[in-house]
Image (spheres, rainbow, N blue to C red):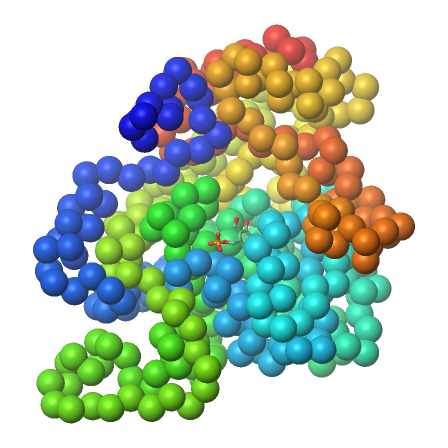
Length: 384
Ligand SMILES: Cc1ncc(COP(=O)(O)O)c(C=O)c1O
């Protein structure tokens, strides 16, 4: 089966918006003789950092590794606790473990699905070292209460902006708000490099150390050694990782960055169309956007209202039978088998309610008006 066959007769949940330009950019790198981390990675880092409004960008092979480095370089280590929303991707919590620390879950706000500041405050213990705020599903979180909380308790702050490149809050783009921020370039995110991630930060020392740690801990990068032409010997001051992005990926990413504004506009247009249709249908609640933030709509998460004609799971099955791929919302991490014992008896009502009643609808640049009308008609037929 070819990859193209995967999409036949099916409206997928998502599809990356890639084409000839990305093919050309990748081909040029492949033919250049330099395919690993090099000049294209630098160009991509400058494009992302410049776009979000931060001084530095450090590309990695995934957002998980970017989060690991950002936490580690913010002083998180063994014996520490890091506050994490329960309603997030397992990767957010995994990164805390990679840094040797323990994630401590808190609830989210019932409307924005972003970390609830009161719940985060209640989770602080003498072992808490950092708060990891997630800008969930494309909606930028208000960082002000977390900045205040971090200051009050002398905690580090790290932002997980995996899904929210291009979103903003109080007029600032995610990546330039309060703290080192990590992005993902997995195909389900705002732009893609296949797999990939990046830290954006205004902290020069953090950026420089992240560059060293992502590449085996070597004091000199391959590119610097190559450019020097003489004999340069690298030193290893600490244990590093192989978290490098390739120039092939970065070349694709740079093309994607040029398309980002158009992709954001297209996602916003599709969201408006869904919003209007859901107002008619009544039984499904559209995503909430608070007045201080913009939504990047990396996903469009709807909530099935209580008393609706059909429950969430039945609706998901019906959509799948009709060739429309939707998905359940995020499952709370405190209920995952890995954490269930430690959190037995703990309730995070907003995360649990969201997990039970929410589902994602297809939204992506390239979804045609006709396809979206089909999704809306099926929803109206089931729920209207
Ligand atoms: C909120 C969040 N954080 C982190 C990640 C991890 O990103 P990556 O797959 O690039 O490591 C994801 C990916 O799904 C995510 O949704």
